[in-house]
Image 1 (cartoon, rainbow, N blue to C red):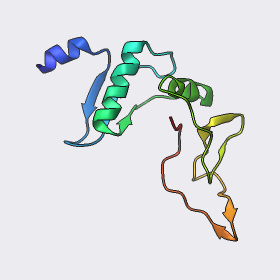
Image 2 (cartoon, rainbow, N blue to C red; image 1 turned 90 degrees about the vertical axis):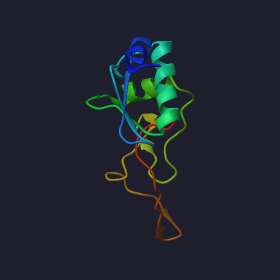
Image 3 (tube, rainbow, N blue to C red; image 1 turned 180 degrees about the horizontal axis):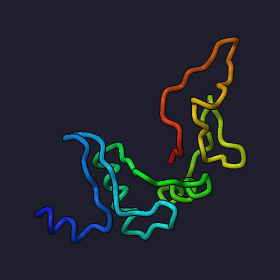
Image 4 (cartoon, rainbow, N blue to C red; image 1 turned 120 degrees about the vertical axis):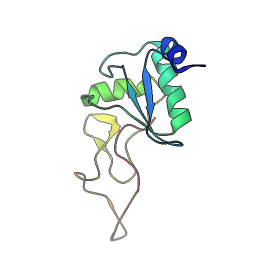
Length: 117
């Protein structure tokens, strides 16, 4: 399928960042409810590229949770950093959260902050 034909069939634009992993997604407003086609295209991009980025999207916690819930059931918080007060699906940023202490030792859990789906 040509690039022109591909663009005609997609409602979003996916721009790979490397040959194997990572892509930027454009042409979608994450503050609004997505249609089923957009959800399917974003899911397909995530499965293909494993990591996707949405640049210049400024979401409240409520909008972030609503966006993520369109892709499946949300999990609650993070085992070390917990969740944002009043938003159990939002993970607190490790840079601002105080980690829980286990048996006198500081716990360290790798991974990004954000919504887990």
